[in-house]
Each structure stands twice: as C-alpha cells, then as structure tokens.
Image (cartoon, rainbow, N blue to C red; front, side, top):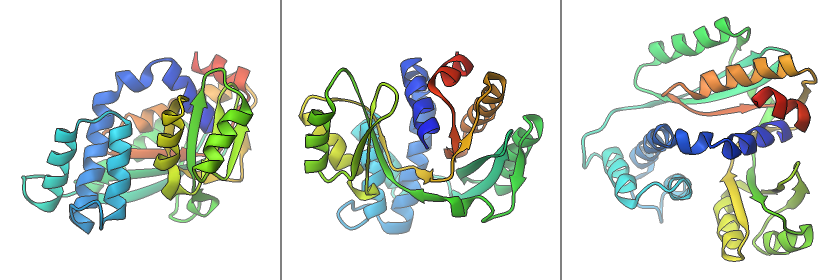
Length: 249
C-alpha cells in the first residue's frame, strides 16, 4: 500500500485532484445514490450512507449536491439504477489490481475495462484471484513540517492504530469506521490533512524498481481511474520515492 499512498500524495501535489473534481463528484454521487437506495436516506440508521456522506464532505461536495444524490437513491428524484461490480486483474509486472465500479451497463463497462488491460499490457483475472490479498483499512495522510509526537498524540487519542513516516507525510492507519473522526480531530488540532479514505490494502507488496516499469503501472492505473464507471482502484505496488517521482513526472 505504501506505493499507492505515495502516488495519491504526488497526484495531490500535482493538482490532479482539483482538476478531476467534477469527475470525482460524479463518482461520489453514484455511491450516495446506491447507499441510499440499499439502506435508506437517513444517515443515523444507514452506516454506509453516513460514510459516503463524510467522504463527499471531505471532497468539498456541497450539501445540495449530496441531498440531490440521496433523493435520487430513495426515489424522491429521478435517477439511474447502478450495479456494483468488482473487477480483478494484474498490471504489468504482476501488480495486483482491484477495481470497484458502479455501472448502469455491465457489458459496456466490462468491455471498456478489458480493453484497457489489453492495450496496456495487463491481464484480467478470475473473481477471487486478487481480492483475497486485500482488506479494508482507514488511512489518513498528514502533511506539513510537524513532529511525529504531535501527530501521534492527536491521532491515537482519536482512535488511530498507528502513525508512520511515508516519505514526507505521516500515514495514520485505523479501523475504517474511525477514518473521518480522526480526520476531523487532526484538522481541529491544526494539522494539514492531505487525504482521508478507507481503501482496500494488501500486505503482499510487489516491488517495482525500474522507472519504465513504474510508468507502465501508473499509466494503466490512470487509464482505469479515468473511466466514468470506476469508483476506486486498489493496487499492491511498492515503488521507491525517487522512482515514483521520476515516473510520475
């Protein structure tokens, strides 16, 4: 996971997150619709919806946009019907990929994902071939020139499990259900929170040591993430900071 979290930090520094904000909002809106449709529109009784609402607010999605998406899910406003699917596969070099999508057309999305793998030197895998390597974990990244002791004190008090140096940022790990509580506590204490999410994480990392190999992995990741139906992409690559910076540049 360390490689993937560093990649997320680099994208933030490059401004890629801001440039793709509209696409991000569309993805979160689908998640809100599905969560509301499956568990109702009340965040006090629908834990999944509560988590997605917290994610939406962390991405600075407006309350009106959140409410509209929830109402589409509960049927108060017209909306589409989305199916949740997870695709599994391998990037070049044997890097495992787990891809979560919400789609209104399974055949179209499956064909698009398969074409990306084919064109970029990856391969699709059978269900379960990759997924067993991953488990969900809360991860909060803190930037700025702050001491480990200060970050750790606030994070552990808020319920974090661990704080580690992650190449210029502090990576805080926790139970997924506490991710946004810890984010709020850190921000209230004045820390710069770069990101907060609860991704699927693999303990089995695949080292990628050459710049050209790293570029191939990042290209297929970006191509998959750019698909409108794709919600999240998880991987297990481990790339050193200098190689990652060179490949991303």
